[in-house]
Each structure stands twice: as C-alpha cells, then as structure tokens.
Image 1: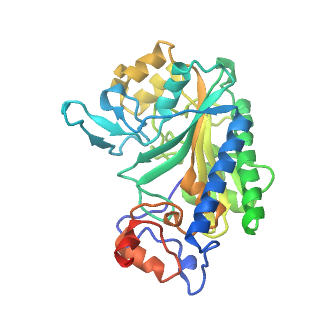
Image 2: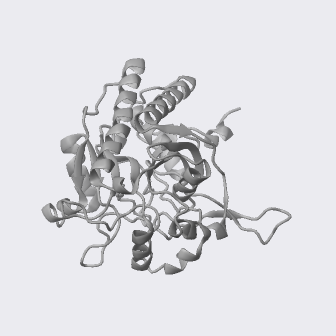
Length: 370
C-alpha cells in the first residue's frame, strides 16, 4: 500500500485530520473483552474461508531463520531485520522474518504439497524499520500463504481467479461481522481489477496513494496489478517489491508488467484506500535472475534458497500475506491499528489519540492501572 507517512513531521503517525475532529470518532466496540471476542471471530472466519476458497492447509512456521540461508523476505530490500545470536553459538546470526515469502515456498517442497494445493501460516514477525502509524506497526501478524501451481498457471487468469477466492473470504467475513455486531457492511460483492500502468497513463501527475484512493473510492474494492519495478524516469512505478519473490517484470496481455498486486478496499472511517493483502505469482528462475540484476543484487543467487529455486527444487507458486491486524482494523471500523493489537507507538501520539476517543491496546496503559 502506498503511504503518505512523513517522518520529518511531528506526530506523523496520527490518523487523518477528519478523524481527529471533535466527537468525530466513536469505537464500534468499547468493551475490551467483547472486542477480543470480535477479533477472534474476524480471524477464524477469514482463515476458514481462505483455506476453503484457495485450497490451503494450516501449517506451523518458524519464528526465526539463519541469516546465511537467504530465507528472510527482503521486502523493499532496505529494512533491518531483528537479529540475535544464541547464547552458546555467538557466530550464528538468526533473524526474525519480515514475512515468510521465501520460507513458504520452501515449505511446499518440504511438505511435498501437490500442484493445486497450498499452505497457510499464522505468522508473527517484527519490522524494525516500518512506519509506525495508524495502519502500520513494528509487530506483524498475518496469514502468510503459498500455493503450488503448474508452470502453465503463471498467467493473469490464474492470478485473478485466486484473487476472487481471497476476496470472497473477505466479503463473507464482513457479512459475518456485520451480523454479529451490527456493523454496516461496505464491501461490494465483486472485486474490480485495475493496473498501475494504466493508472499512471490516466493520472500521470497523481501520487501512488492518490491513484489508489481514486480507484477505491469509485469501486469499493480493487486488485491493483503491477507493483514493483521502475518507470522510464527511474522512479518507482508504484511501490517497492523485493526482486526474489513476486514477479513484477513479466508482460501481461494488456501490455502492462507484473503478475502481482495488492487487494485494496475503501476504508469508510479513514476515507482512503486500505491494503488488505499483497500477493502475486512468484518468480521462476529466469525472472528472478533478471530482477536480481535490475535491483543490483546478483550476489543473492548464491544463497541456499536461491540455489534451490535455480536448480528446480522449489516448485512454481503463487502466494501472499493478509494482515490480521489490518483485517481486524477494517472489519471493526477502527481508526488506529493499535486498537486491535498490542504494539508500541509514539507516546506523544498515544496521549493525543486518547483526547479523540482512540484508546490503544497494550502495555502503554499499565502505568495507569493500579
């Protein structure tokens, strides 16, 4: 999701100004225990529908991986991983994953998952360099999933059919939450498909976030294809993507590039686009080598994971992640992600949020509880 976070501004992580107007925001669920029950309903309902619609099996997953394995997801390629060494093995560097983009693909091989079937995990991670604001946290919880596909399934049609299955899980979850808690459902029955290439041509002077807002306000729910790579002027086409998981260079039949995208919805509280999922058809050996070269990191091909892809050990796949807290924030119509997860946020912002009826979960309140 393209963001407008500006770290040079004071309290840059606050929600949009209209949310902070006097008496503008009232939590949908005020009771803390009732909210916890609602969080479970959102997560379990979505996970069950996701598994059914995309043909996935829940598996366990690691909390850390070795640095030398190359299994950590590089996200945009610049973030610092949380790193530590075991007490008795100081030379070993372990990293808390940003996501399981690479591990999941290895898991398809490890569990000998057949084509047409996949795995999903209940992932927990840390992102030390993420923007800490009303939709982002240092703590990451997401349904990380990956599905084994045949080489001939690396198509836009297969991508779209998978998106439809995920969106159906999203739609049905909102219907269940609306029924249980009296929240007005907002999502349209069908998701709209759009791509960054066309939107850049149509709105050349708009920012990436503005293009997302235009689409989501108009259609309610959009799969925005073609994330990653650069335009002719050298600037990002839309948003960054690491070179070794999503395929963002393959040309599509519509003339654009990339077999990946983001599932975005219109958030009625924040009045802006809101990312639910980042996903895509994964790189094959050919596209991975090209993308590594484009990102000027060809040395990564020497890592164990990359060698397993190049020698055919790892299967072709499609995969993505659905943020659990982001999902709950949307479903329960919360103004801040900290209302649905225990995280850490700028203390000055936390105090300011309280003035506007936005109370965050977590240890920040412990000092005031006697």
